[in-house]
Image 1 (cartoon, one colour):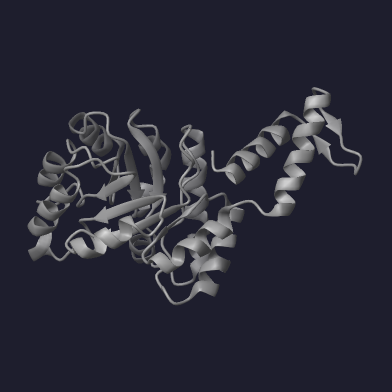
Image 2 (cartoon, rainbow, N blue to C red; image 1 turned 180 degrees about the vertical axis):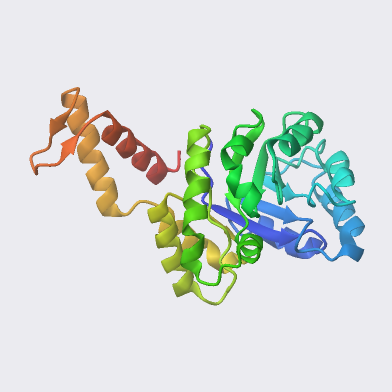
Length: 270
């Protein structure tokens, strides 16, 4: 089984040398960005350069296409969806399930990841997450959402974050990754933000620089203490089925055991 990705490294599609470096940086997923990272006059070049790069099979490379209401989106999908090096498409600024279904019909079963970046997208989070079997994940685009909501304090996004996490799980999808931390030098702030995101229920995070990757991975992998606790719970469940109390007084049931098993799987990256 392929380990659940914890790091998603974004790289601009119009800079092939940077993309090549990103592929060797150790991220679980590299996301070649044709949207926000590429100026309008370089969209065609970015698409062509990405198509050349992904004409051969790659390991876990996604493409963030241009927003579906832009003049570039149709060409992005037509050119890139059939390529053997593309293992997923990230769809920016999704606001309705119909948009996702329309892409799924053109993407030939390619995994789709919807980015929710507006108030309307957040309101429709579950219907978007459940729109089509090709949807493998949803996530926030916090920069655009912050502007749309007029939020100045970071805590003002926590309700939207929780809404997306709940919608993903309700639709049977994996917990979403956190949005990017924009200051690539602020690794201490990144670690603190990841800890907060993990407490909310995020799993993994998008990055915009390789130096962020080890901080993100460390923040979302279980600690030694969490692994020990999970092993204790699983061993107790193997001895006796049903609800029970551990010697230290902690009560465990099937849900607690399932959570412990997920912790151990994540620790093994399976």
